[in-house]
Length: 175
Image 1: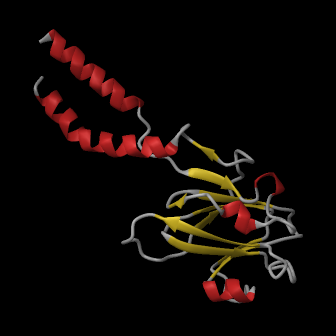
Image 2: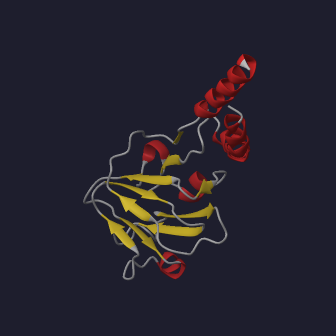
């Protein structure tokens, strides 16, 4: 019986040490931030954006804006029907839905000069298409960070652990 108790406690300790899943905070443009002269298509390439990830836009207040817009407004560089808009100098936007999210600078000439970003967000295909959620919380980092060293591996572990939670309840029920 003591061996089974030790095994159950060890299993519970292992589960409590595993991070369930983590989101990534991407600083748009990395150290260049949200500015003219940055190739945001290249910046976004090779990145996998997921529901729950955040985009932190750092820019000079009064010199730029960040507006989330529709696909057609992205193509025409129009902010007249912006979903959200910010001119504070720093904004953190959580990607709450899968699909493509479009962001542009509303200062005349900036978007047409390339100051625009589209990100394809993966996640649950059953999620409704609604705008992202902006937050004016200052970023804690200026480079893309993850709360775990290897979030892809941790996500796989998360699925395995979630499946094992029933097993943990069963083991605890033995005592």
